[in-house]
Amino acid sequence: MEKIHLHSAGIDIGSRNIYIGIEGEQVVSFGTFTQDFRDAVSYLLSHGVKTVAMEATGSYWVILYDMLQAAGLDVWLVDGRQTRQVPGRKTDVKDCQWINQLHSFGLLNRCFVAEGLVKSLRNYQRLREDHIRSAAMHVNHMQKALIEMNIRLPEVLSQIHGKSGLAIIEAILAGERNPQVLLSYCHVSLIKNKSEDILKALEGHYSETGLFSLRQAYEAYQFYQGQIKACDKKIEEVLNQNQDLSNEKPERKSKPVRHNKPDIEGLEGHLRLLFEGKDATQLSGITSYTWFQLYTEVGNDLSKWKSEKHFTSWLGLSPGQNHSGKTRKNKSKGKPKAGQIFRTIAQSLLQSKRIALGEFGRRIRARKGARIAIKAVARKLAEQYWNLMVKGQDFVERGVEDYKNRLMEQKRKYFQKLAIELDEQTAVMKFIQNQ
Image 1 (cartoon, rainbow, N blue to C red):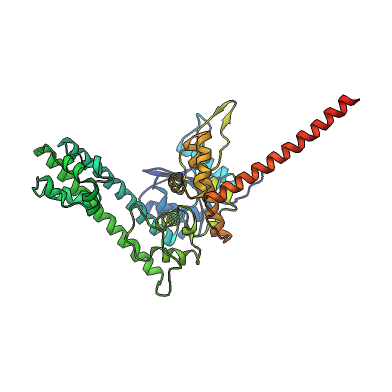
Image 2 (image 1 turned 45 degrees about the vertical axis):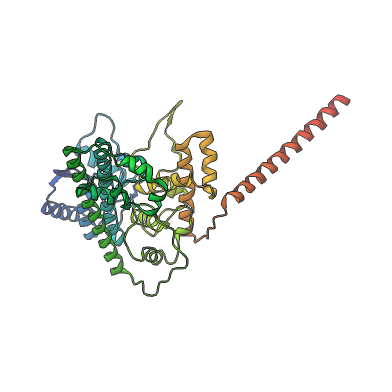
């Protein structure tokens, strides 16, 4: 093979040391303090290195990556699965030499690395999602504390962390025990439709330990709600610093965000400016919030992926070739987070009765199961997203009826083809019989 990347180096990164391998030179080790990274950069420059490859190991690579880029080096962050060593030969010293060898022959693919505005917003968004998961854990703690006191609110309310549920919990923690009074804190529609069930559910057996657990869970939940609002405020500040929405006017009414809606004014307008007027919310299932999540994971330049097939493959939504004989190995680990976002959207589309993608997914689910159906719908949606952002193709949801009509048209053509073939075979048989 011919070498593609000359003057290259490979770096193996650990928590305490990094190892640098340059062809024709002894492997050199540096520490992981900031001054050690500076010395490592100077060492690479002094040996005429122009391009560097290193594995994406945890978060250890982030600072070194930035420092190498600032020094003018072409840095390749690669997936560790591409640099697997021969069994029995894996050491830190041999790893960096192996990475350099693979990189010099052009056998490694560069990972997508967020930069600039995308990098800042991604950090805030991922931190926000961590707080949402922590808040959800404390919702479960509140439910457990209520059930231990036989207060059956989870059975009569769709969510105890809604406005009515939290109002009742706050009243209980304030000392209120009368079910009639607690019922008055509910929304009018709940009082009208579920008053008897709620009164029965509020007849609990209160205990000191149960109330203490409930208070702890409630205060922790409110704490994380405050943290989520702080993240929203920071995201809004970053967006406003980079864009001016004074001339941006919404073209149509925004889709409702049903869960974990960010408190960010003009979020959809900011996204349209970032994507030069393209609107991903016209795609099925994508709201301003899921669009923002996708932006923080893949950025606004999807032309980095050559085609929609490259994009869906990177997302982990394409069938992989991991077969050995009759064994089909599962290689689902380590997929980008953006792929999971598309899967989550696809899961909700399967429940829709008026969207063509939902009907498509239900047909696959009936034959192959829910997991494959979700992946298939997510792949189609990701292809539409890439086409919209790269080629600017307009998309209009035609609905289930149009999808069924096109399906019937395909079946009609197929049966016509079979009928023609059957007629030809019948004519041949008659000819043979007459001979």
